[in-house]
Amino acid sequence: MPEPAYVSLAGKYAHRIRTGDIPPGSQLPSYAEIARESGVSDIVVRKAIELLQGQGLVRSARRRGIFATDRPMLVRASPERQLEDPEETFRSESKLAVEVDRETADIAAPAGIADAFGIAPGDPIKHVMTRIAEGGQPVSISDTYQPLDAPDVTTAAMLEETVADRLPPALHAEWLHTAPGDLVKQIHQRFIATDGRILMISDISYPRNRYDGFMFRMQLNP
Image 1 (cartoon, rainbow, N blue to C red):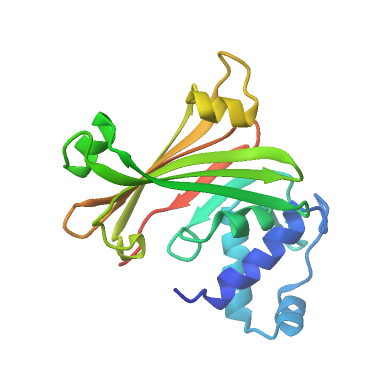
Image 2: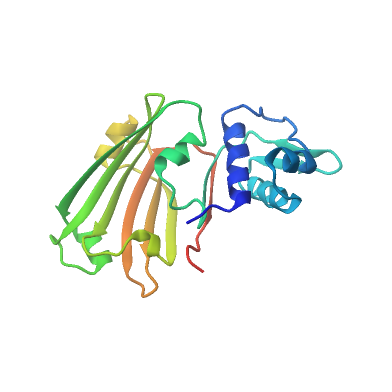
């Protein structure tokens, strides 16, 4: 879906803050300067700054202006950014090269996954394992499952996401170089259709100390 102008503008400033181009504590240009430089209205700038504040990337000091913070967060704002490719998510956070490796196969549905999809254990489903490295350092790994006859996930009406510190699956621990017994930050996702059918399930693992916080917006199609 097309990206609103304020989301695009916020993304540009988020990238500059995350990569250190705008150092922590630095003051951002005024609303009028941003509007003039970006060729957008004051309303677009205001909404972009509000989005950055919600992400914990900037703070407002009364009568002084807007300043960059040093609080890293994983930000997944839907519908604008929830469905973006992992490459775009990580490129907005770092100047380092991002490498993405995907393995796709049809597999027999494990019992828990089959129950969620309302199919029999062992029925064929699509499985995608995505490994992501940033500057050669592993930063994320995910397992995604989808019934073979499921509609495209962009038709989903709702997204449920659960964030927790968990012991990682063996392949996740191996990729992230997690020591035995150490926890990872894991996001469990369920994309749900208007009729309640689950279209896709994902389990995404990150190093536990990569982000200080997480922010989500859940409604995909109002």
